[in-house]
Length: 377
Image (cartoon, rainbow, N blue to C red; front, side):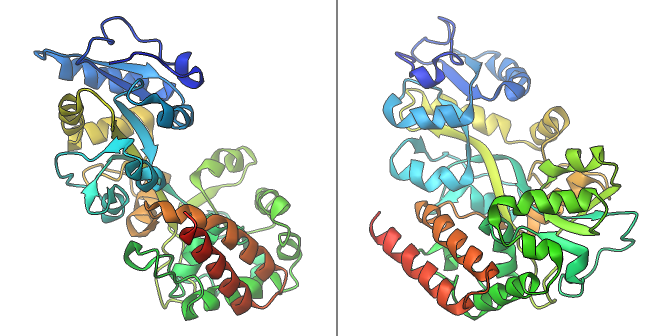
């Protein structure tokens, strides 16, 4: 099974001789996840004629090594959903041989490519409306009603701005079709103008945040100093905010003006099967064994990462409930390889919009660049 290991992951994947038996299965996951998968492997291994073992490795090191490994690496590993299309097209991952049930539509869509399921969703994340509970008693129904002086968002970054496009009627790819790009349609132009109105408002922090290189730090500084009532940011920022003494609350991001929901870009990561595994049947059996409400609840309990399983219970008013609700209505980052061509041109366009350039012109140029880059793939 494991014949040789790339230098990038060799230190992490030091498997026992038992794990190297021909039909045995190795799961490669981040160190913090090892206890969870070890517990499940011990349960699964009972009565089996092959064994599942768990090894600690960096997800991104493993993915970087994957194209040259041809099966000489973990049979099962974790991936972010926006890598599915690329890896599937290279036959580096293989579809699951069963249908996943009981997950949010966003997570189910995120795990699917060309009509096939490639990933068992494990955790999901997105941006949120973070607010100072000592300054905000009720989350507003729309962003447009909040004075620019009271909030901030890094709208020079498409990860943060994608939902603004969706809430104004824009879209990335219609039905995941890369030949139908909606980033310069009427709704997207409306979103660009909405963002530009904030940068043109004359409010100091928005003016400073025209510079994308410092925008995030300025947003966080102003919020943690109590100068802002709310920001759009991810749950990863909450620990620093709490350390600053801000009594922070979290909620799904409100609509821009009530015309469309704010569908923040959401990422889902989960377990997939190596396209070169010598025991795909066993790997599928283990993933199917994992795909239960009980194991989803165990995942949340052990890792404190939000599962997109509909069976997991989150406390009302909690951060994790806000994340779950936001990802449930969010826009999954497309799994198709063409999505990778969106980031660069949109980053350029959003910077130009923030600096006051013609919104329609820069979005037209961005879409033209994306189309050319896709053709060259």
